[in-house]
Image 1 (cartoon, rainbow, N blue to C red):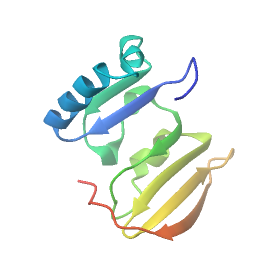
Image 2: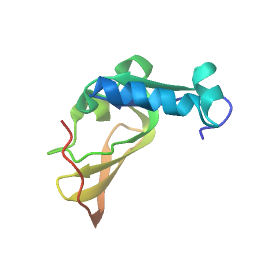
Image 3: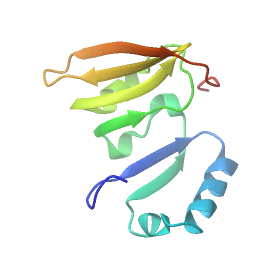
Length: 115
């Protein structure tokens, strides 16, 4: 998934979905990633990300934001990338080495709202 030393962090605002996700993962081939701490899922506000583990090389958002969440941009490493639906457009946002952002809309999409 992310290599031997990488980590994947999930954020979901519905606690029951977090619990169900963890239980499902424990039953599958990725269970060892939970056990060794390479994968974690947390209850939280997706617009705020998960600053405890930042900075991140990559951030994927699975729901449409009304605008690019500044908290996520702040949690991205220089050289990192965010893939996020914004309104009805799938955006790729790269944080350059100097901290500036390069944004590109790659396609029209329909996602549930990021709440």
